[in-house]
Length: 346
Ligand code: DP6
Image 1 (cartoon, rainbow, N blue to C red):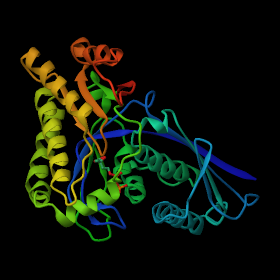
Image 2 (image 1 turned 30 degrees about the vertical axis):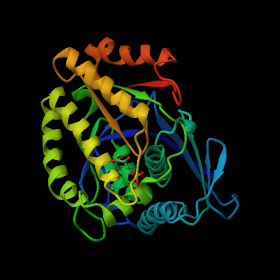
Image 3 (image 1 turned 90 degrees about the horizontal axis):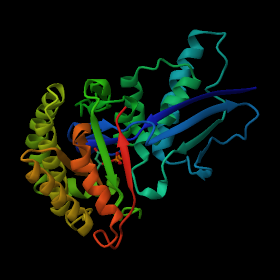
Image 4 (image 1 turned 180 degrees about the vertical axis):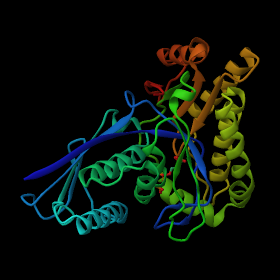
């Protein structure tokens, strides 16, 4: 007999960045963060979890058809937590099939090329955790599942909700209060759009996990970012989203991306995620906003050179239109120029 459940989880892109851990094992952050979820039609991971006594004894994970190592501490932490919750179900209900002890087989597919250089671990761990939770018939409260997904990858905790999602840093040493919460559903501000400029599909030189550890250990800008800048911006950003105030949303998004990359540069040895094409994209957004006389476009960059640009649907021509024209013009974007992936919000 094979037990099976499937789910999908969306990619999220932070507008207030998570950068720094106070506990590297539990992925407990040094500041809260906030993200916007991309539409599942565009960027998501689909995962099927199954278990059976007829499977080989080892748990397994296939991503886009390729076997992955599941022995890592992060994946193991997710499996362990979910199995413990399943054991509780089985202890309470003697009729519940004994699934917790059966080998797991996880099959995941991204609907975007992994080679696009986009962070996929967030959607990946969120989908893995929810698929197993569904398989084990655990309560599907996204906040509770976010606590488990966080142990897979910090940013994954924000992919259990759609729309506008916060991650409360928490203060408990066991991480019990470090989890995601809904700021607003996507329907609250449905005309939000994003275009992603894939500047480079190459794997990042410095992984976020090791980069943030070096930042915490060496950057002198980091302490004020974590203790003053981000707490203030978390509030400004939540108000901007509640009021559908794009100017504030855009300004805070761009300034927080700049602050995060400044902290990276202030790390020793320095970490460079932006390149010349990234900086050209920043200039282009500045020109678009200057021409409009207000902020109608906002860029943000994660741990890599690819730009995500937010705008409202009514400004599609003035924002995405400009980037699409540039992308079509190879001379304008020579070198490591890539394709644009358009993202809608669900
Ligand atoms: C720059 O969530 O990938 O994208 O917890 O070590 O897995 P780990 O790190 P990860 O870091 C994401 C960093 C970021 C900012 C963000 O998504 O908030």
